[in-house]
Image (cartoon, rainbow, N blue to C red; front, side, top):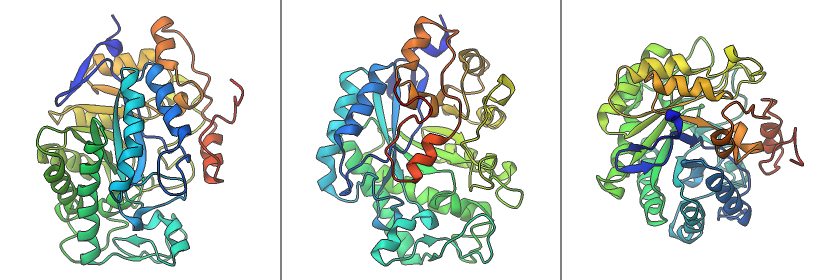
Length: 369
């Protein structure tokens, strides 16, 4: 039997197979931050389509972290009842569901509509990789954000989510703190790697206090920035080891602060041959060899054979997909029937570009299929 279709566990979370739906922003939340019917339908389709663990994307826990008007919130208890509808939709079809808790940092441009500036560890003058006004976060504000992550995790458990994932990749707030390029602070939150990881540690501890010792806490970790001057893989691997030792229950390995579009980002395009698939595989392999917790590999998976090889070789424990499941939410069930099936996703990133224009998540290349 293909190992990808065999059950596995993360902490005490039993999963029916090794397929994870990597957190994918859907641009479909209500303007109030509440769950929409469209989101419930999306989760149902993924669960029915065979995904074992669905990670629901970028849910902001603090008002200063919001990057879009159409994203979910867990900033207070009023959002719990709607979130219960999402968890029910997953569980009714035999899937588990986690929620990705999030703060956009300097990327939270939407807060400008509220006459606030986005927050970041440091302000970088003449940054070629980021355009926009933002300000340095204060010590008191850091404490408020940490508490918000802890409280958000507690609400997630109340809503029936099976786990939470901290978004620590792709140039959002934790990723900005980890990168020596975006973190130039001279206090205990900046400087050496241990200080640049302080935010991650304090968020983990706040989450753990709110969810208890038995509840799975994951992190999506950016281990290398998308440009030469940023976080280097050497430090990214060290960070992964330190966070595994701290108590995180699984690591999803991805990239950090974004560089050039699209080559210096997590959503690389033109994945049209085997050699371009699994582009974060070497990172996953190296980190898996040095930690004792499950590793979730992500990054351009299109061929079942490559994913099976990675898990069999113990380069990762789980594989995560995003774009192929946008156009084919039942892809996992289809692979179960036909392992040679070729996904129809062409990695054009038009789905992403439509999201940036305020459109809800959908496949642009094959809109009627």
